[in-house]
Image 1 (cartoon, rainbow over the protein chains, first blue to last red):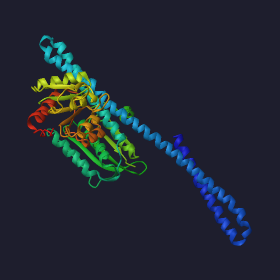
Image 2: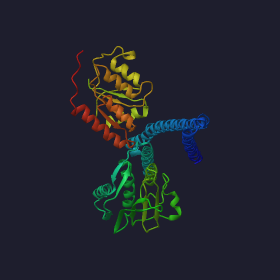
Image 3: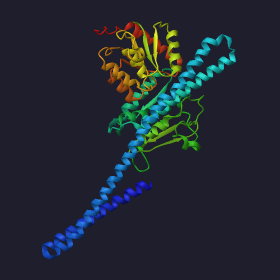
Image 4: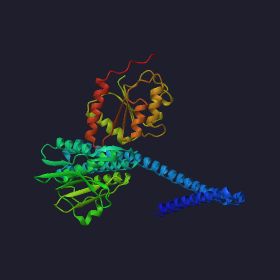
Amino acid sequence: MADRRRRRLSHTAIHLTAALGLVVVAVTSFAAYRHSTWLTAALIPSILLLISSHALLARQIRRHEVIERVLHDTNRELESFSYSVSHDLRAPLRSIDGFSQALVEDAGPVLDAESRGHLDRIRAATQRMGRLIDDLLALSKVTRAEMRNERIDVSEIATQIAGELARLSPNRSVEVTVAPGLVATGDPHLVRLALQNLIENAWKFTGRREQAAIEVGATKDEDGMPAFYVRDNGAGYDPDFAAKLFGPFQRLHPASEFPGSGIGLATVQRIVHRHGGHVWGEGRIDEGATFYFTLS
Amino acid sequence: MDEILLVEDNPDDVELTLRAFRKSKIANEVVVARDGVEALDYLFATGPHAGRDSNALPQLVLLDLKLPRLDGLQVLERIRGNPKTRLLPVVILTSSTEQPDLLTGYSLGANSYIRKPVDFQEFVVAVRRLGLYWLLLNQPPPHPPA
């Protein structure tokens, strides 16, 4: 925050000095036109002002370069951190799972039912952790991905995602309504990922509805900016805990009721923030939920 | 020669991979190299393997990426850079699915790239398919002229 204020201040300083310089130059030219003796005297301050404005500009650029370098280094550290997570953290999990499985196979007959149950729990926990690591990596990839800026057919993407979900769970009957003509500008891959998370959530949390309904549409946020929304008539959430919604690994429902690792909305939020937009939700327990987002 | 060269530094992974081979009824002899240098010494019959016939190449190399001394990608580069081993089937078998690893692996001429799953049963399935494909179904490249 302090950084942004400082940057804005120095931008203002640059503009002010440049403007002042221009005024002086204009006055000088006018004076030169009438009394050539003024010329030398008046040119000096204008040149000085221009020089100082350039010096300020140069300092600003240098500061930006430092920031850029720090960002670059941080990104590289993040890369190598993710790499370690991806590689090193999974290796011990493979050992735990593999040797538990070997125990089940080789010593299963001499173990009692309770011990076999313990081994099953070890394996289930190992695989859960494997999934958590994968999800964490996927989330960090959202932050690291290169951004493209293109026109996106939101209606088309939402329809595709809903169609795919319907294909994967033919026993569900969900009425999906997608408003026609929704377009946005942003990174096609990331926006698709955000929509996918939101629509999959809606799909999941309407799992206990006889008449499940999901609606994808557009509205305006409080500043009049275009906002997209995904609405469902599913399990909703307790608005008292709404602040937790977008945190990674935060869940407002027990995993036994609605499975998942709690990474979906965190992913959506990161994507939306990378586009300079914001995301918010509206919901009540058992009365469905609506998630809105803007992209700029 | 029908052996498999397994380049893997983690003893647990070695044990589990051998177990997966046994469970998949893959009876080929498995030679284990614990790091990149050892793998190259074996392939090129140098260092501790100086007495080996360097024309006898394994049928398949299973290559982990994160290895002590020379890493997997460097090993692959050396393998592809040598006329004797240029065509040797190399399958990368690793934990990483990071884009740069995939990109560099394939760019350097890996024949296949497989991620080791956490679930051992899935791993056994992967090893069985891998063995079926590379040891039985796939026609190996002809031996290079000595």
